[in-house]
Image 1 (cartoon, rainbow, N blue to C red):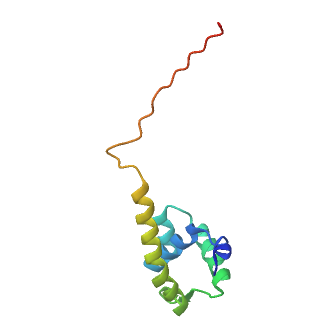
Image 2 (image 1 turned 180 degrees about the vertical axis):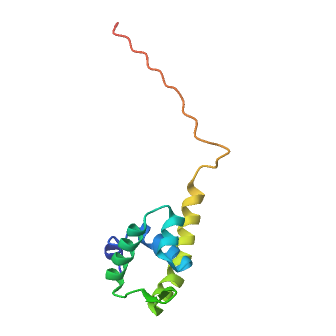
Image 3 (image 1 turned 120 degrees about the vertical axis):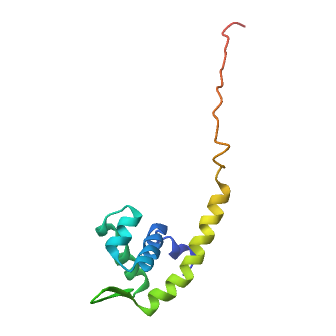
Length: 111
């Protein structure tokens, strides 16, 4: 996949996929992410189309990841961790929040 093709993949889908892999339950994953179960299902369906893999198989106890899902999870998790670190390092520390300043402008029509 190149950068142009990467544009098709919403980062939120990868976060959702990661949580489903951790929970092995779509409903629990949705609840822990604060989103609806249909939203999780839609995200997984989109990722299934992109990766051309079912990702999860229903069994008697819930869902079981496919071999491809495990492979994607092992590669995506460190990437998400690194992205989180990179973005976090750019955020302002809470102890020094942004403080707006007031600018006043005076104009004179006298010449």
